[in-house]
Length: 400
Image (cartoon, rainbow, N blue to C red; front, side, top):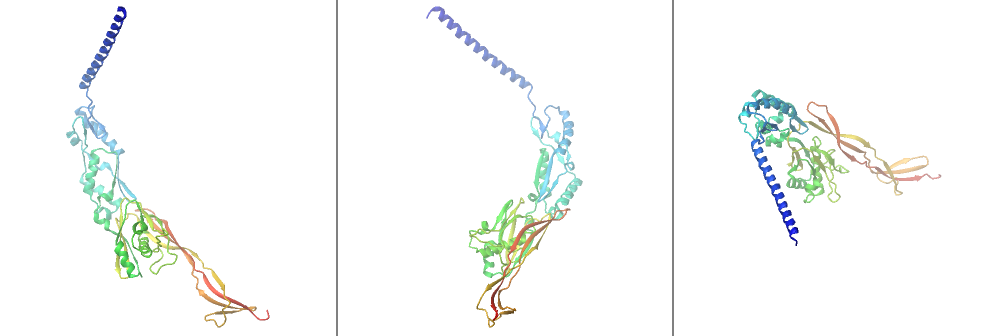
């Protein structure tokens, strides 16, 4: 290689190395400069909940907090709910303790706010609870436990909080008897089998209860499952349960009645089910209270809304009269009716007495606290008529 070319290449490499060295030194210089600047101007992360205090001096903290807390109280939603009722907690009852908040405050961290609840304000809160949720419920409400959770959420200046009353109720209240009914005229063996398999049933929260899901794989007969379903039908009409799906027995069983008559057929998929849309469960207790009597009890927290259930006859379906020709009928036939007409003689024998059919509605009347009653049709039971049937022989008179 010529000497001039070698010299040019060497100069080029020296130039590249010099540029890279200068660039590296500039990066190092920039990094050191930023570090020094940041070290001298570190961001102060001091806050109380969402209220940022890092850009305020110590003597300004109290004034900033006193100014910001009322706005948070106005915007925050603290709700207590039970069944179809809810209460918005009045946050003005809780006094902001600025002295304790500032006294416990530490720099560069998220701090808690401190609040107090005076005895008169606690009594006012309790009165609000009883107004919305009734004294019957609040008498079993653990107020102290609720206030502990509430105060913790206040300390963090949370924006939206929802509390469920049932989380603070005495467990014994869930065993309250809501409704009771009996199914009578049972076969004693059926009563024994039912109690043995189903003395206590659970109705889970936010779920559909189904007889076939619960008993479809057991040894209970269709008749026994029908009895269980019929008792449950009777004690659930006057509740908040919805979405009833079932078929009634076409003819009332000896133990059945309107509003307590369900037909379960395992193979055909005839089921009885309904939906519990509440956030907690119920229990159904079945007890043999006499050799041929079963008592059904629905257990759970009392309802705030007043539920009443009635069974009403909505429509009558008249029966038809059917005549079947029978040449064997004569005047000598026992119990025969003889109808003498100018042109013929009719011999008629009653085979089956007719009966009207009907459609019955299960009607629920709901009256919320301080509200207006509202009627709703929950289910329908249809019973077909039984035709009245006669055998008949019409004999023309001689000479016609």
